[in-house]
Length: 333
Image (tube, rainbow, N blue to C red; front, side):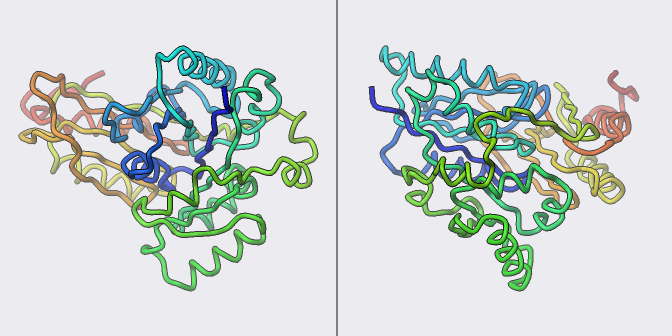
């Protein structure tokens, strides 16, 4: 069986990975894609945000970062996907791995060279890194993961250029070139990018990586910042949209610098469609998703990732946003 090409899609929290992946899945390119989703924390959201028409195979990996604690699960999942493809149970042409925004791509890429079975079955085609024009300058200053994501990239895509001026974009481009002079840089707005420049490009060059990091194939150590954590808000009752907007707006004003990423799928009182809610630091927005199906159990789930977040304050306030909370005058435990 020919080697299965793999694209690692990485980028820091909120850089636009899922938006781009949705665009790739919707675009007509004649390829069937298996997607491996990794999210930081106990529960994922991105799987629910992906457009699925029955042709894609979506696999979730939670409870840890793909570059360390669940790396063994990645090897197992890749092996199972290849077995099912060989037996005819699954039909796909390539794999895209969307890493958590806190992932160092180096240990993920290592998997395709240090595990003999995986290296025989799969070909690492490229590492594509998304860079948020609004927040990248600060992220690159603070987080070594953001630096590693840029340094290991075979393609760099700058997103959210509409939120900053041309001078800031040019300054960011120059900084990215200093970190990684070999990776072409393009822009992606709302997930729109040239797919032919991202897939089947044979962009990953092991020799070039070894020049940058000679210990690439032997050093598997990796640590995360201890003060970065995540938690999940879940609620089966419908939420009041106005109260939600007021509460979260106030929280963003107070704690926005510590709220690195927050996103969710909401069940709103009087609304038959899902509301997709996303934010990065002080930037927050919502849009309508697909309609709830007849008889489908409706619920809300929001994942928060940040530094020293006031979990009790956020959860307590969100439970007060339940549509009937003011009548019941009770807060969920």
